[in-house]
Length: 495
Image 1 (cartoon, rainbow, N blue to C red):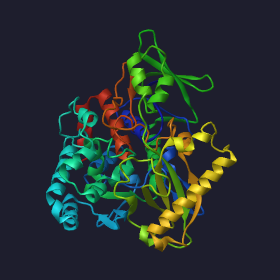
Image 2 (cartoon, one colour; image 1 turned 90 degrees about the vertical axis):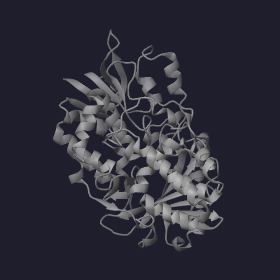
Image 3 (cartoon, rainbow, N blue to C red; image 1 turned 180 degrees about the horizontal axis):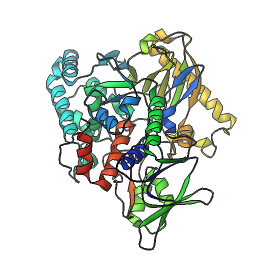
Image 4 (cartoon, rainbow, N blue to C red; image 1 turned 180 degrees about the vertical axis):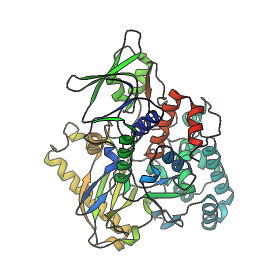
């Protein structure tokens, strides 16, 4: 069978692309290397507690907000149930030195008022920052379905200013700047590297509203599966793509699969890491300068992660995430501080059907080089030195968490730990980048179009990490195929 489109990779961006194309009458094959679709969304369970590995919470899912509209368009809304995080403090910023805690509320007006109460001398800076975040979001295509798509608009994410430069121009208050930079932990790029525009595009949705999905990422993955089946998308799991076939005229003609099989198609959307894309495409199909640029793309910071359970409910972790900073300057160089003295992000974990958490996930940014001694090893076959490293790292994280949150001391135990090597092997990022390729000032990330006719790109490297970024990248790729005006007109029907 010859398909109209093959989509390589069944993550959020690939599934979004497959559903969109199928809804528009195309015959679509969706190929996934793992044994299930959306493998990172599904998480895992231990001792009756489910740990989300690819979805914790999201902005923009409130009624009539962008992600709500996108999910309606994709046919997911009736298949999932969302709930609101604590509107008075969906994220809790905790700085140990100086001792300071701030509960970040939803709503621009409420956030401006609360920040002004805590930093009364910085009201003008706070107002300017929030106005600029809001204006940036209003200018984003697809986030705003009426804005004119400007092919040069992405340049402000490349040329800056950085988030740090923007904040430095507004205020000298180190603690305020640290607080406003805390969500760098959600995309793995330090405030000294990420552009203000990229930061604003991500945090703006959280400032509007924050919601979770009941059942977490697993529920969303199941909703995706049901919609793919409903639309007749042919889904092939455990089928690794090993090459992209290009015909005599230079146009894409199919894909090659592990084991020697092939699949013919008129076009394809690839959602793989850009470095992996280079391995799939025939030599000479991309210009040397383009290949060099993709090969040189920097990845986001990696992480050491802990997964902890409690025999008793932990109500203090309900409805809010924790951002733990040792000091106000610890976000400037993500990954370069040792575990136990580095920023830490905590997200709650639940037993099925429970209304209060019975555990949490802790994410500590570190560099891939931290696990360099065991780089050649693979999952399930690590040496003893690696296991000792993990045990010591878990001890340091536990001490840090219990020091900052004494109420958790004696009530939690750690059952799993993961390292940059775990991230590399499960997320297919060559250097263990927790969020794949960086979006930072000075780096040109790939666009949805390529020089190979019929080959399009989607994935977090194109737009941004997270559910929102992945969905947007799928729409951008499909909008290139269908026409952006047509694509956005269809989305408006769902408003």
